[in-house]
Length: 229
Length: 44
Image 1: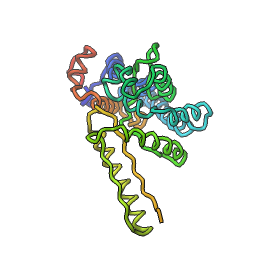
Image 2: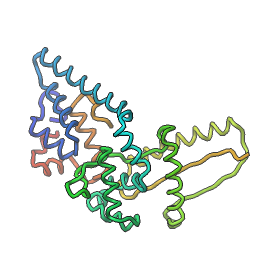
Image 3: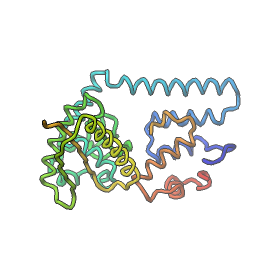
Image 4: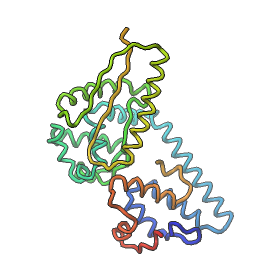
């Protein structure tokens, strides 16, 4: 039925599939509305449903663009950006082994269980995950796969913060698990812009490779290009 | 991908399925049907 234009899933089946695919409640409501629209015959009813769908899409898009304007969400976002290891644990939630048993992260990242719970709480408050009542087990995880920093000039400060964290981790990472290079060269302003553009293209490749990859480990890549003289 | 950008519920399900499959490579529509105890023919 998923490939048929003439037959449709019933609402019970649709709900079960949505739940199995870990859709969030508002996503389930939206998909259910899309199904209602697909099966509706009456033109007025179809118009009504279509209006509701557009409204929901508009509301969703507005809430996304204004999300950063509410003080509460700004606060949560800042906590996410600056909590130590928050982004690493966020990415780790995509890995089944850590998702199933987040406690394993405590020994691997040398943090206490209360710190882990605090980070999971921040992830939950930022809607990246939904937690069970124990505050430790993720019930749902929004697929993220990759996170780029800085995403905007406002993230620059947190980028610096995480760079320091990365350098500290780099020193404690085995050679087989890291790749480092350093190059010093002479060039001009135009070359600087070209290299910057090449790196942005490279990042797109990284995103594609990561998106096609299995979630087994968390990796981090950082690149700095700067003028000394 | 943001599901709210999709206008067709079948496409929305297929899109999310692919995203979940990245995390769970062993996931197939047949396996999903077994998990939620519905007939696999629903997904054909």
